[in-house]
Image 1 (cartoon, rainbow, N blue to C red):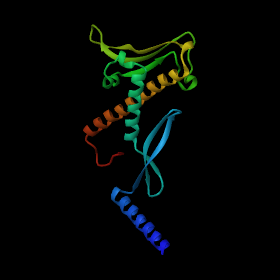
Image 2: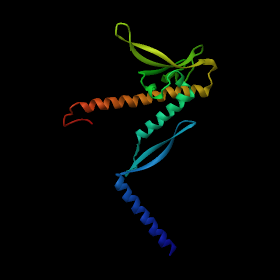
Image 3: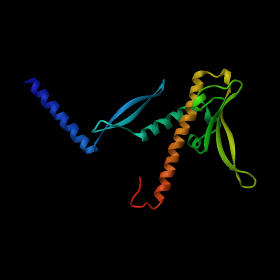
Image 4: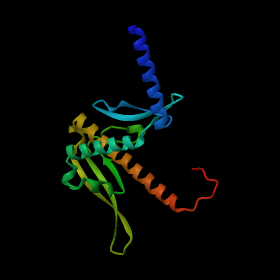
Length: 188
C-alpha cells in the first residue's frame, strides 16, 4: 500500500516538473556554484535544455562580476581617488603598473617598480585635440613588498573592471546595430 502511494507521488511530481518545463520553455534553471578564485564562489544560473546542453545566464554573471568589482573597489580604497563607484566605468581603459597582465608574464611583479592601478581617460588639450591622460586610482608601494593576497586582489579588480567594460561595449554595439536598417537576410 505504501509503495503504491509513493509511486503515485513520484508520478505526480514528474508530471508537475514536465508541465513546469513546458511553461518555462524548454529550459530548466539550476544554480551552479563556480569558483572564480580560490576564495570567491559565485552562483551562476545555468539553464539545461531538454538535450542536457548547458547555457549560462550571462546577465547573472555580469551582476556577480560587478558586485565583486564594487567589493574590491572598497577593499583597495579606490574610492579615495574615484569617490563614486558608478563613475569608475567612465574611464576608457584600466591598466596596472608593476605587475604583468600578459599571458607570458601574468601575475609577475617587476622588481624595483611601484604597483599602481592606472585609469586612462581622453581629455581635450588646449587645441581641442583628444589626449590620453593617466590617473592613478591606487598606489600600493614597491613590488618587492607587495603581499601576494593583495597582489591577487589588485589583478582581480583590473580584470573584472575590464570584463564589465567589455559588457558595456557589447551593449553599445547592440544599440548601434539596432539603429541600422536590417536586410531580411541577416546573421543575427
